[in-house]
Length: 290
Picture (spheres, rainbow, N blue to C red):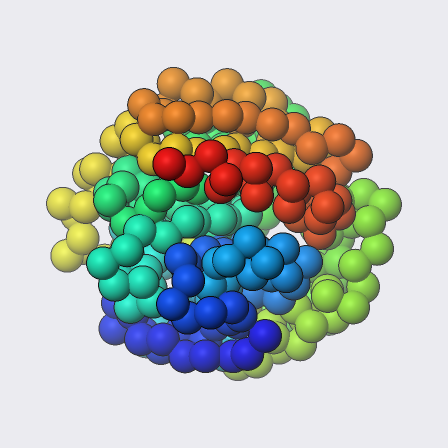
């Protein structure tokens, strides 16, 4: 595995990469609170299946660039992915794998740019429409408490670092109970301690509610983010993840091949909790490509 840098959508992205650069691209997108190292258990199986595997650190996550314009809206994130695929796999569709925010932003990307992806696997976060509907459930609303907390600009930015990022430990323990991932969480915290990083990471949540963090030039794209998804998509969720409920009822948002699977004995970070099971599901899905 090596670290490479790719310029896409006007930003410099750091990426972990492995495999033959001439092989088909598998682009792996991480979530919050996380980074590209989250995919370390997926690299070897995908390389063995003859993919060029690239996992970028998303915008605002060092060593990728923290943008000065502070745009973190769904359309901007979709354009980041478009730029990465066009730079890394010109003229050839990629396979796309995302978890948490990596999945959340991929729904919009797949709606906007289906020609750039052959097959997709999205984990642990429902389609935005299914997510919105799920918030009528008090349990789902409670699960999303951090969304509202992160809207408190200045307060959240100051309090979470001051508590040595105890919220990060809490979220991992709450979302993947019983799973010990202390070494990985330590490197996430080390990344978040870099100036400006935590505010950038939680700006994804702010952009979901506040126009201030959305690029006004992308309004035409934003209007198409909810279009039906024609790309063949595998949706995965841990059986112990509360997000499984809305994910199990989102098939209507897909017009292409679609499959939903719950991974036993796994929570939110299923790809780290049950890597063998998740890898087998991904490889089986990719092997179906015509």
